[in-house]
Image (tube, rainbow, N blue to C red; front, top):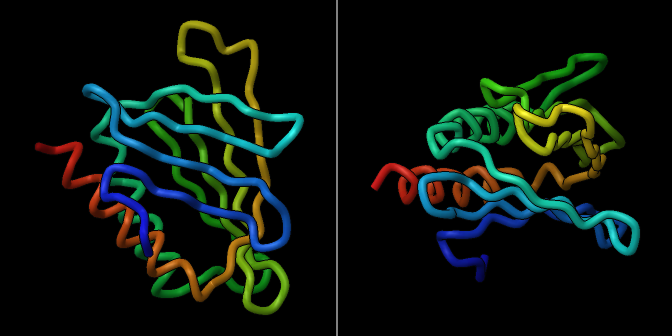
Length: 135
């Protein structure tokens, strides 16, 4: 994988868009990057890393099929992730990031196409991040 345990990179299979997750003091920092237009970051509470790990573990074990859509979001809806079946071998991920619960006037969404084969690696990296966040 090559990524340190403190950072998770979820990359689009066809373009340079990425989502990065990393541990910051008592929180998880989220970066959405879809160059050159989008480069934003915000934080969510560290405990959400455990929910994210479970969500991606489930996606890795059984990706969505047909019209099925799955969703997970932080308690304040600062970070929302939707997953759906895409082309063969790909899962669509829609990641929405709000500035914070006190300023809900902007939300940035980046859609990624992620290789199904890479989901176990993403799930394991998020699991490691969750463990780090709990320390």
